[in-house]
View: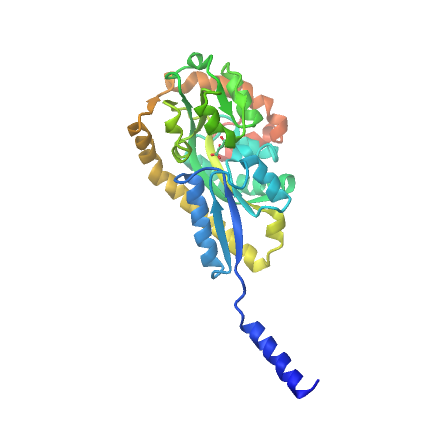
Length: 332
Ligand code: MLT
């Protein structure tokens, strides 16, 4: 190679080395609107990811199901056309049935229970199982509080009051069966269609946490709330396993560390905000009713009939027993 070529090639290489490496920008699908758990989890993740990776990986949130309905984002992530998604756990269960243990009625009875399960051994096993079943890896856990029942027609305090109401539920067998145990044949419907269905009175009600009712502006189309505690909503942040396995070992560590930081931030967010948001919904005209007799009838019907129906699907009664025992409760 002549002198000129050597100098030219050398300077091209030097220039290439000096070029800043383009940051990888990832898209994060978020099912809910602004102001709720999912956005808080996503923002904390994006901030931590940029910090952990020294700005080489960034994450951009797309709220309100802009990148697809929650269940569809699982398929998109599994096939590698989407990198990250934040969604309610009940919308992962159809793809990874053992995660259903977390949506069995009255298994999780407090935020402490939710944190203990997800951040402990049970959560770790679920992460592995979900990678295998659904092609997505849970890297962060959002905590959204109990799903309370809302409707536009009347206060509901007893199982009898529920009769005759048309209630939307996610396409989740466990939740469908829970309502059936209360004598209601619910309407399974995708999350993205729910606001319009409530507005057009195709359905009378639905259930979701206070944080979600607020972030989705359901107070505009719903009046009555029943403070049910049958299902504590966990809202995971998942990464496409195809995306995750394409990262270097260091990048994987950074993504996992950012997920852990987001989990911590989400737990703090719920503790700090839920009571305020509940108050805000009341000030906007919503009316809250406590379930009669400390919810005993709801609890009795749901646990005695729904749990046994799903033992096979969730990986056996032993799996539920393991979860209950890890929470210091007697086996089923
Ligand atoms: C649902 O009801 O489908 C979900 O819980 C909605 C959500 O992700 O907030």
